[in-house]
Length: 376
Image (cartoon, rainbow, N blue to C red; front, side, top):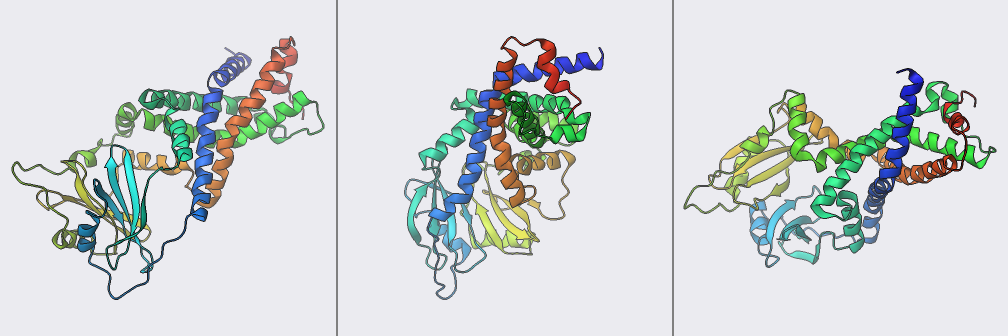
């Protein structure tokens, strides 16, 4: 098979994959962009809660004890402890399966500041998340969304292969604004596509990995020759028959501080299931470190500090988060990801227009001229 035949096969695959998954891919990516925008704009409309320091703040264990009874019919899940004395502690409570309540706590009195608010109480955000993760189809929809992510990755790769800039760089990035509608549509498609393709494929592929994590995670650890899920296997509490779970006390916090002597506590997560653990977190030199505590024996199970060496598999898994959410370069990459999320909608429209032109009775030679042309 010569290069022209290979290119023709890639072109056909690109066209029909785009027609099949284009609308769903556009929906997933567009909601991703809207979620980024919401993350920027939401704080502008939320009043900031501040507290006036009065003496010394309560001990963390005392705040924990008060927080556990602040909101009836809930289970305390975590506390985020701020660095500034004028900022409140943020608490999260489980109010049922997949239901969470957030509230601010005065670190000097242990009282609630304002009314608790359910996480995702906005129907708009719930809708965006449901479309983005499950295409409104629940668990089955999540599997469909994962397949869409994989096919979109293939679509991006095939688009990169077909990009005319490989023959002449200037041609690949040039847009003839005064050309015919057909040529202008093609130029815009190729330029937007090549700019967004690499990042869109990474975001979509990581979505596929997460939605099929039951199968993909073992494959990643096997491919990197890394021990799989060692942390998950070890980091559980050992149930002691007849012994109730411990409450979080100063003595447990002292053990965590002894295991992680540097830094101040930034958050505490509480077990919400029988084999769950207490997780005390600190931030040292901009990096998060954890001490995990057995909820029955009170012993330190694992310490994840700056000296803990992660396996290659762990590092690969950790890289998915910044790649998917576009946080790898701070604000500039987040802004760029808004564009990346909008690009599938634009590419769907321009691609559909190109397909309609091809369906309009043009000869195959005429139809492929824009793609194969060496001229700018």
